[in-house]
Image (cartoon, rainbow, N blue to C red):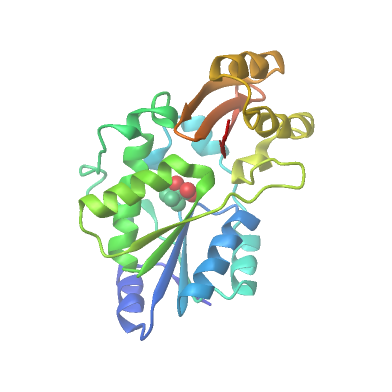
Length: 257
Ligand code: PAF
């Protein structure tokens, strides 16, 4: 498995590939959800590149950035065992030569749901994904449906800017107790980890209105950021834990009433 750190290396890698290239962008702290994206890419393309980069421009809260889990040594072992061909690990200086003077902003859906209380979050996500797609130039890129809003915004950006990568959404991978796998779960206290699956269980009840569900979540001790049903999908975000180092959980489920 090659470790690519410079812009020249990642560009040269993409150009030298004879077959199709699949790409899985990550911020590290990898879990089986990420590995399911890698596996899908390995099944559908000839070579898979993964990026590991904790993108500061998508964090609107400096504490959240400072507390973001880092497990690099294990991540690299997992990726090697999963058959990844190359890992791209850039720095801020390399990815943002403009010091974030240029950005990709979506003016509608990115301001709702997770965008409402996290101003600038999706602008940071879209900007870094645009940069990564331009550097890696994959035929296919894989994103998890846990971040459903991110997935649809990335799809929209690719269409709007005529990018040549196909964006593929992959199902949420859950723990046995139903909690959606997320790097941030590592930051849950033992007590909050025990309580966290209740979020998904309550979210999945098709009989409750969004308002009723919100009240039930609050009663269960969650701080609710939002609960909103759009079409046949219900989206939710809650915050748990110490206010000095809160852990934000997001999830979404298909609701058929
Ligand atoms: O989903 C993530 O881990 C990040 O938002 C992404 C897509 C790697 C961009 O930094």
